[in-house]
Length: 122
Image (cartoon, rainbow, N blue to C red):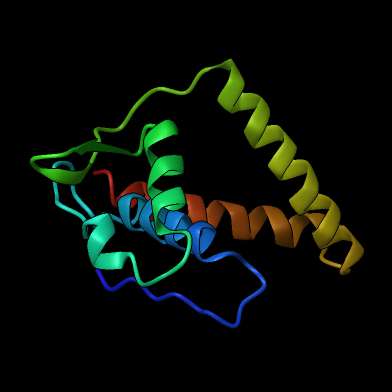
């Protein structure tokens, strides 16, 4: 998987890195136990330490000083994560509604993406 970071984006580098790794896991491009670039390898990009810290705290990766960062196994969600999803969906739905996207179109797009992601886990 190639990680692409946009230094001119309004999105911080660490958020871009975090999102790319999560999408890579979801798409099956990153497999359980697969090694990731070390923080030192990515240190030239601002915020990489923070991205790995966020990914570790969220349970997507584990970090071992001797073996580096690796993708973790798929995990169950809890009440805290459910609240996070609801808050993010509320914001996304509000944004799409304000931009004029219809409910049916939004739900269709959600289903397409969800189904595509699920194929990676089969």
